[in-house]
Length: 399
Image 1 (cartoon, rainbow, N blue to C red):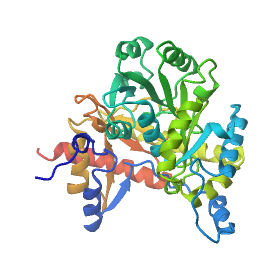
Image 2 (image 1 turned 180 degrees about the vertical axis):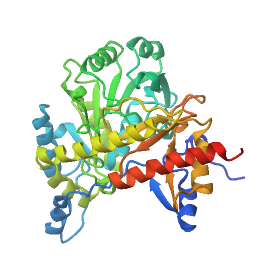
Image 3 (image 1 turned 90 degrees about the horizontal axis):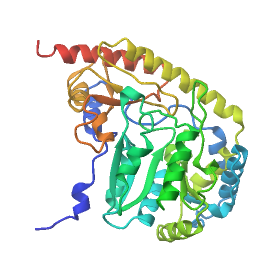
Image 4 (image 1 turned 135 degrees about the vertical axis):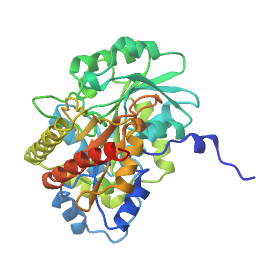
């Protein structure tokens, strides 16, 4: 009998995409599906992105350097310089999206069976990347009632043992929208240094902060240069998910040397994506300001809509473009599938990501969903009304 590896069986399905067959069936049945399940912005990709490679004098679509082109790494370094973080281009390794960056990092620092500590709920693919590398995720819990604030340093300390290799955070948070204060980050940095751990920070939503919140990068906290690794990407910032351009940033040259071996094995990042990325990294601050204002308005719309649903709860959201929402159902897994299979409101239904998939603890998130507010405000309002009506129909289905 043909067999698969153990990791093939343990690799979790994505809560973001696993209901896609039901969405496809709903569309085939004539329903319009509002996609709130995935962080795919509908804001147009900047025209500068397309202009750059349309104007590029490319006769042969050749391999680029494994670390990424010098031009793109220069522009990434310039971007960070404007933020106040001085980087050399040799401290930047361009990857095929943030996903490859995280995969490289986990494979570089973890042997099979070794662990990374992550606050839960967390971006579900962190677990998948760990399993694919033979590593494991150990969690510390945050709660919706506390707006998913970073757990205490004592909670992190309790999880550190001989197999711990790193702490990983997402700031601003996916799926929670939480923004961590500088003081909390300083404590994490100190903990990492004291225990000789890496601190991995996924900062792809850096610009998207609201209500006076301020994003602080771990790059700006002194004393941990060899411990800090930042993951970044153009996917969300420039609404360019399909370009697949991300990067690893670290002042730890040995870490980058190891990651470079993996980068060489996969040859190079996407060529046209790098050309377009080089152009959009040059965009002025006004570009970000307009997008942040739009996402803030969408966030406000979602919060107001949830507040009108009996038994639902939405915590404070200060960043990214996600809301982890509690709904008055026992199983959002069943509810989300039911919405696609059995329900429509004026010919439409809504697709969301069940919350349990963002937790490693099996008994958590069962009544939560992640809502990605990435649709224009008209469609988003219609989607939230669809959710409201769907909850009523779901609760009345057996009465």
